[in-house]
View 1: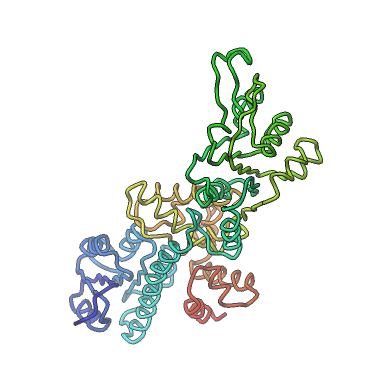
View 2: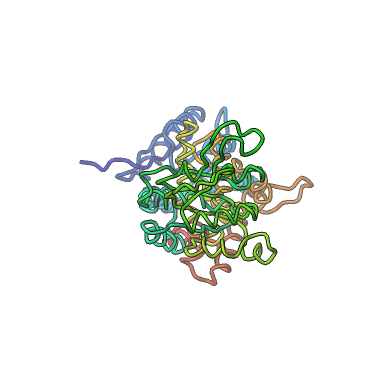
Amino acid sequence: MPAKAVLSLVVIDDNAGSLEMLSSALAQPDLEILTASDPEEGLDLVRSRHPQVVITDLVMPGLNGMEVLERIMEFDPSTEVILMTAHYSTESAVEAVKKGAADYLNKPVSIAALRERVGKMLDNARKRHRALQLEDELRESAEFENIVGNSPLMWDMFSRIRRIAPHYRSVLVTGETGTGKDLVAQALHRLSPASRGRYVVLNCSAVVETLFESELFGHIRGAFTGAAQDKSGLFEHAHGGTLFLDEIGDMPLATQAKLLRVLQNQEVLRVGSLVPRKVDVRVIAATNRDLRVQIAERRFREDLYYRLSMVEIQVPRLADRKEDLPLLERHFVAKFSAQYSKKIRGISARAQIVLAAHNWPGNVRELENVIGHACMMTMVDTLDVADLPPYLRSPAESAVTSAPSANGADFGTLEEQEKHLIIRAMESAGGNQSEAARLLRIGRDALRYKLKKHGL
């Protein structure tokens, strides 16, 4: 039984003899070769079959090869496009590369050279296809209680959560804004004996100072103006479960003192009442602030800090675990593909380079917003640089797409910019090819090929 075709190649040429010759010369067991003598029909094939490689003649009636290239790049910039022409010129070759062509060949084409060039493109496409499958499998295996990560820092955090969850009474979760402290709190609750009870959340930065005690501990009728009836607080509401106090650094000092008593005695006293009420609540507190600094500035109680930080979990910054970027990118692409009802396959290599170069001050939340924006904006099934938010896209366009500047200055060809990026990656990796390939999000064999191609 012949192997099932997993890859496809489209050849567009108005010469029937060229179509027949190329189809025969490039045939492979797992490759579907489709041909079109009309450029519009060829573009229809590209849209319907999503080929990995397109070979097109430059001079054709109707649309020329350069226009075909532009339309393919608009539809799917990850497609490898080879232009062929009997009317070769340096100017048109440079223009083709700037517009995204993978190669520009002079007719008559050397069949051996073309077979080798296309073969390498298809080998890379097979590796990318397998890599996407592995990434999907890895993403599933690297998801711990809705937290995605496969870096050593994250595995260490997952291990701490597993060990702490069955036993904690109070936990302090620290980390920058956007790192996922709320997900850590939810994981602790789900893995603890309190998972059968409620999970109650209070954002301390969103509560009016005068109402803090009433929110946490409740009040009795007549305790203050407007207290028309008895009201239970969040501690009583979370009885048998977990109370998550987000941004605890914003809690007033007076309330901190009363919170400390609740943690020590497991009793709450409603505002205006003299009768304490027993509660069984696990408390998780989170902050993006340095509480030691707040203690020194007398804005946070030292005894409460030590009570909470008997067990502390620090959530790492995204900048410290960039090896998790591909997993997180795939995770959010899958999420927003489903949310927006779009079939998005992934992210182009050049867009991944832009994302990898960013420092992510907003951490995972910023990445989620960026991927959500790109998924909303894209008109095709592969996210590219043009789909990213302007603050990421603008500084990257000259480096990645090699477009001329407004004053007519030329930033060089895409080949030159690729060479520049490879040099930067090799320098950053200290000459280590495996590390440089990881930074560029390509395979080591692909990097070796590019190093040879650029004479590096």
